[in-house]
Image (tube, rainbow, N blue to C red):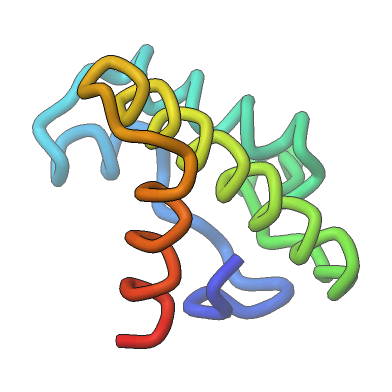
Length: 98
């Protein structure tokens, strides 16, 4: 989503990436499957996974979903810490302006 990989670029093999990251092949496979379900990559028979062309609106929507989740986590933490809505808004404003 950040443009680091270009359209048509092949991803590392599942086994190769798992080895490089020192994680399970199953975990890597699940990550690739999730990316495929989200339309970011496609499986190419006998070749692996390739980066799909990205629609700017789809990429924006992906970023917004991530942002919403992060904000929800921040709000949950703020509530647990007794931070008021006004304080939270001020914190976000200060951080946004930095």
